[in-house]
Length: 76
Image (cartoon, rainbow, N blue to C red; front, side, top):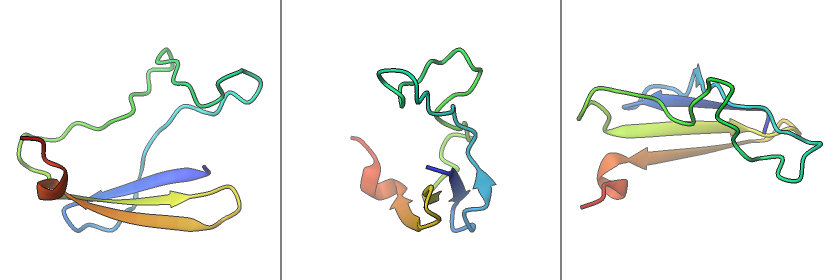
């Protein structure tokens, strides 16, 4: 993946998600090392997020967008 952007509550996915690099020379290039100071999530105020829109740009320039409603992924 080239980059991941997200938007909350109907906002355009313009905020870049900071992520660890791929470790191409290692057996598990997509493994998270967690020593880079980069967390695979964001924090928001409790109850403030109703939807998330994610835009993924792949290495070849193609993109994929997904929208996720809180009610659809809420665990009981």
